Image 1: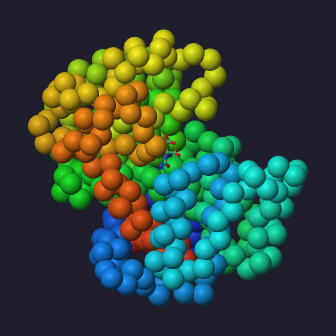
Image 2: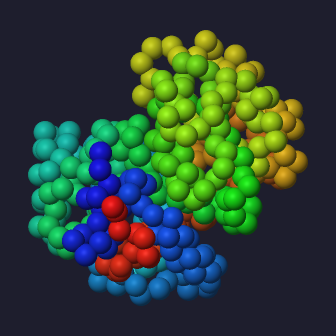
Length: 326
Ligand code: NCD
């Protein structure tokens, strides 16, 4: 799928659908804007007027807690009016097509749709059919992409590690079904992280995973050795067909992040998880709640990053130098 649909004829970022086609400068520009929004969340009055008068619809065809809530808070802190639609429970169940649902909401003068769907490509389909003044942000499409999560994860890494130049990042778990992993690998590559590793049982690694520019490991000790950043992933059981892990207990024994396994990484390694996490399956509570965990800061940072991305697409600003796709 091409990322060029994201840019308008003048090369401005109009939609945010995928990491593909984004330049390093555009991602760094999002970070700069997000840094300025971090302080908004810490103020007594947590609002800026950037999107005043704009209407944002959170169009979620798949359940979500964190992502939907942080998008809602982000839009409200930008002073937009926000409507949350859990479409799974309404029109789609009555047989309405995706595009008809969107056309109806468009007729209500929506400016920005934040779309989550269990089918890969759903946000693209909508972006290809909306008029020029309507913007789409992909909040996760099937196992394909979750670009705002990837940017907030990278932003969190930079806040804790200062940069990307010398990092070893290990992504652990269900790589096969994870849209988070796919988008994060792309963003870390663009930002110049020299070593990205994926660690999983062979059944949860996509075939030819090395073509993504990562090193793959099936052993936690080897994969975590000397790592600076560990990103744990949830087992996406709702997407799995058949038994891909022998048993939950064995998965935890081999791949669950315990204090013992964490010792293989650098002493100052940070531990991340996009949530929702399964304690006792992919991560031990002692690690999830421990001093190296930045799982809750990820959530806080997610609001600032989503505010920045919304401001950028709604503002119709020129992306930073080099932001235009080739
Ligand atoms: C992720 C998602 O929905 O893809 N979660 C999230 O956005 N916070 C990861 C997951 O569901 O495991």
